[in-house]
Length: 219
Ligand SMILES: [Zn+2]
Image (cartoon, rainbow, N blue to C red):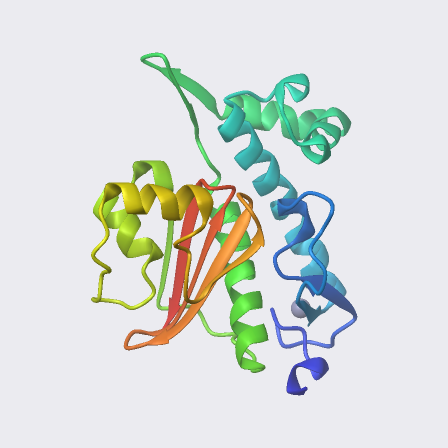
């Protein structure tokens, strides 16, 4: 494969391999045959800090706390127990407003991770380097989307929304029954993605922990 000769993130010399999606986002047992892409050591190391931050952030948001004993994912508990600075940083980003818990996210780091995932999917799919900047990057909590936006997000053909009502959508979302067509379930409730070559170009969507809905487009 053409890919083998380059780091897919910088085009440099490949020295290691990266899983798509990154294992830190998932829990064991990992799915078999996870796609791997070539990467250089520098990119691999540069991303790992941001990915660690990102995985911890998502878990803290979902549980509303940064206290390791109140988290569910063992991997994240271990990281936060081991890294008090990261824990403090996340705790500082946690704000309570009118009884609701929010986290101020470090947008650059989140974007960095999302772009890495998208580039991994895009490159693996096309077997071609995808080094240029994407045309658009959208990162939104699914909980902040209204129903139409959610349906549009899960539909794979831009402009052609399936006629499904709220219950059908719930079923699709909850039981994955309706996640037809090009949505791939890597780990249920943790990572699903879809790749679509449409009018808009190449669209990569992935939903992380049933929470963060990402969409990256290259025209
Ligand atoms: Zn590189």
